[in-house]
View 1 (spheres, helix red, strand yellow):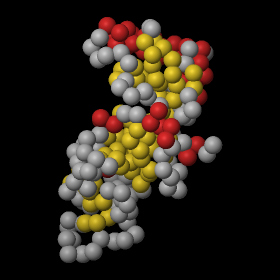
View 2 (view 1 turned 120 degrees about the vertical axis):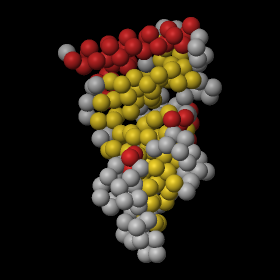
View 3 (view 1 turned 90 degrees about the horizontal axis):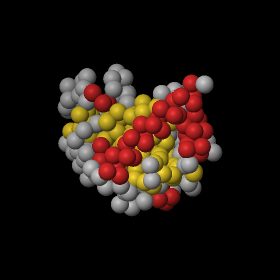
View 4 (view 1 turned 120 degrees about the horizontal axis):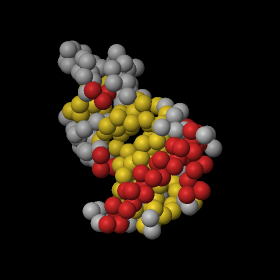
Length: 224
């Protein structure tokens, strides 16, 4: 499979609020600005204003469906990424050739998924099955190792790959766990861990402890 055609689990859906915040993210080295329009539709853009290359994450969501750059305030609309307003020249039509780079985004299984391929494509239905309904996010592990090292370590720890790329299922200290792997940068990966353990429960506390040990084991194995 073309790596850019993969759907990447970038961040938990709840982290990105409609018409409010902008969240920074990465997928295969691509820096992203994640946000939602007021109607809740998820957006994943290259984290760079096409005017002067300032990061969009320094800006703000305005008008419910636009992202405004922090530098000159140029505004880009949700969906197309097209520039629609230049505050310094309100009477001047926005240039049609200025457009933010937009990536396909999907809201599924409690995560925002991003696809880096240039062609548009609908999210496959199996994304919705990556995490069983009703499960809770336990934690996201930050791993200073390549995604390939994480993949190699998950199977020996009892995790099995599912039909969704980089989605795994296993157990941590007796609790079932779904692990979604994000290949963020060459030596940076994130592992989103979901479980049926209730938040605040003893079982969830055990999952947290086991997750810390899992991270230590993976990083130790990668260093050898």
